[in-house]
Length: 259
Ligand SMILES: Nc1ncnc2c1ncn2[C@@H]1O[C@H](COP(=O)(O)OP(=O)(O)OP(=O)(O)O)[C@@H](O)[C@H]1O
Image (cartoon, rainbow, N blue to C red):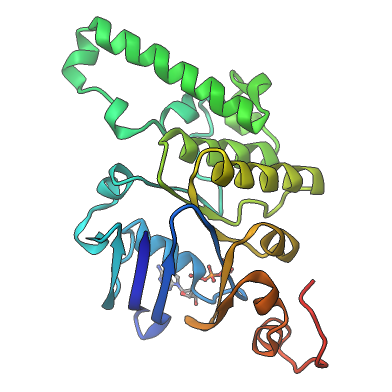
């Protein structure tokens, strides 16, 4: 579904991503892990088209993603949540979710101004959809709360909910459980599995929480200093000495494990 081939990203002499190649298969949970500054978020920013690689190619369902602009990436079916929640703080949860609506459901300005029946019908559908998403996230009771009044864990839920509103084919989740407590983390873990198993989403996940990664990922790629240093199913990666060394910065005994 998503293919990176030899992708390199540089910022004024710093190589943030170095000849990175990987492929994400449809319907799987694919995780990218690595120490701070490894280049993980830069990978997401390339997919979202905020950054342009200096070389390499990125394709989505066979189409060259690098020819697309950020809003076209969303139209192609790729939505994301952000590491540092990016929401409209002074708007309600419901209104924030509505901003994530699939682009096809957004009507042109003229039909909105004329308040056409079709617009009213779509509005109703959109509100129903937002209610469904809130139910899935267990935040229905917060619908009319201002985002700025919410605890951080709930703000993250809304951020993920907004991405789900677009009904993406591929969802990019950047550290979805960072700053969450264990019950919130459990909720997100169940949600990600549900997205895959019930809604057939493909998930690309960046996360530092190793137990979550090991529990829900189908496949893991490990980055360090912009490069892929290992990849495989969770068990393979977990026992790989190169990975352990990258995380700990020191050689560990043979049977050392990440979790
Ligand atoms: N817009 C930018 N301008 C300059 N340098 C950048 C920019 N974006 C990222 N970098 C640098 O690229 C490198 C990779 O950053 P990136 O945010 O992708 O790492 P990361 O693996 O997501 O880290 P973390 O786990 O801490 O979020 C870092 O050295 C970072 O400072």
